[in-house]
Length: 191
Image (cartoon, rainbow, N blue to C red; front, side, top):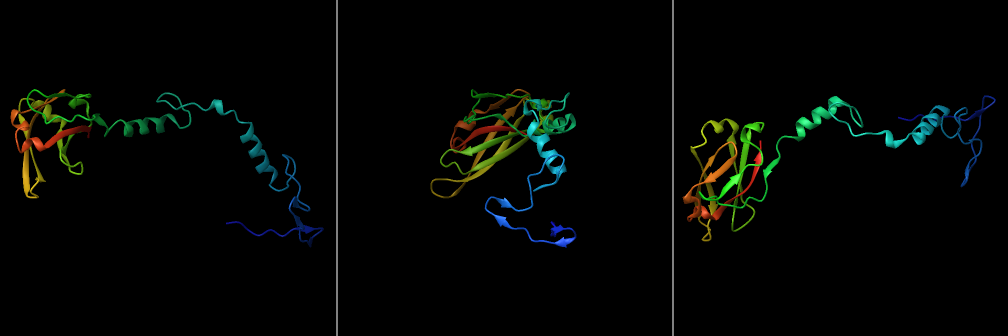
């Protein structure tokens, strides 16, 4: 909160006259004399104006820059997780449509999320979590039952079967048959 200041000359209260060009009695500040701002603020402002911006470097894990090394490490640890591993996959997938993971399942923080999407309209997303320890069972099918409204506006179910290994997602032949062929694998997220 700011406080009101009283202008005094020889311990008598005076009122400043103002004009479009300035205020009578208030001069420009210098580094040695108060004016429209304090001399300390004028010194700070001059130092900021003289600062060479090219000295600012991007922080790394081993050297500070615009932030400390520690903050950069924290930011990197947050940023490297929960990202899209495979974008615009758009397969059902059947047993011949193999999706190669852009990041190994065991390298993910917790696992992956398979994002299933309805073919007819783009407003139905279904998220299937696969933990990274599932890599111990790469030949085992995992199943997902996805409810959706068919063209008759009746509730229907799509059953998806996939095998997830450390590097791939492989579907089953039944994924391309009705009603399972109404929903496709849209993308894969790290979790």
